[in-house]
Amino acid sequence: MTISRLRSFVPVDPYVAAIVGMVGLATLLPLHGQGTVIGGYATDAAIALLFFLHGARLSTTEALVGARHWKLHLVIFLSTFALFPLLGLAAHALAPHLLTPALWAGVILICILPSTVQSSVAFTSIAHGNVSAALCSATASNLLGIVATPLLAGVLLSSHGGFSGNAALDIVVQLLLPFVAGQLSRPLIGSWVARHHAMLGLVDRGSILLIVYTAFSDGVSHGIWHQVNATQMAIVLGLDALLLAIVLLITNFGSQLLGFSRADRIAIMFCGSKKSLASGLPMASVLLAGQSVGLIVLPLMLFHQIQLMTCAALARRYAGASEANSGDAVPALVEAH
Image (cartoon, rainbow, N blue to C red; front, side, top):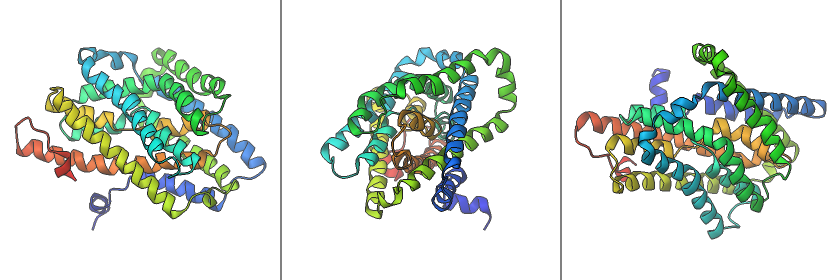
């Protein structure tokens, strides 16, 4: 059996496997002493570089060009920055003692992050949805997330023991200023960035791997694996899966009730249900400074893999239905599972 065929049966993203590998490396060989200091400086630099590249890549014009689809974009933004947080708060209110405060902070963190760009557009394309609308909404979600996520974190995570009171200045220095600098540099380096997107993608992914390693090194030093057991891991997995399933159902059937076309409904469902690991990990390192970041981002890393596997299966399902049926009906989520 070839590797490609094996991956079709075991849909584990290689990048997620690399992240898991960094967690294992941090567990076996965590940073200590001067290494921790150097790792902290390297992480700060990596985060600044990451958001500079995001600013250089994201075109404000592209984010605004789909203004005629404002209803579609509004539904996606409400799903990303309103529905998700409400569901997270409801889950915490119903079972506040189900998880530790750090893990609950991680679940809330998932709920306030922006959508992804690459996977949202890719899955929408595979499922024969409105790709241009998906691109505009996902890009705008990331632009909006630079401001919305820190604001939501200040309101929601402060009550869950996860938000640092000194985070405002860190947000400006490590996230906002590099992002704005990237946006301002687009006339100079925008075309170069577009030509070297593959190489810069490696920079992105390498930065995230470094952030994971340093975060979990700190967690291991503070006994992270003594703070979470198999039962709590299973509960986090279950909460992540339930959260994703509810949002997928609401965006799917809600967009039908609102009268959107099949292509638009696909874009709404895939963009409105995604959460960005690439933005989430560096944001967590800044927003949750001084906290047990390794433990807090654990729910996000699990959610990332669940959303990739679930949405890959759904996209293939919708693509098959589109080829077999030229009608306007989107396959029911219940059947897709």
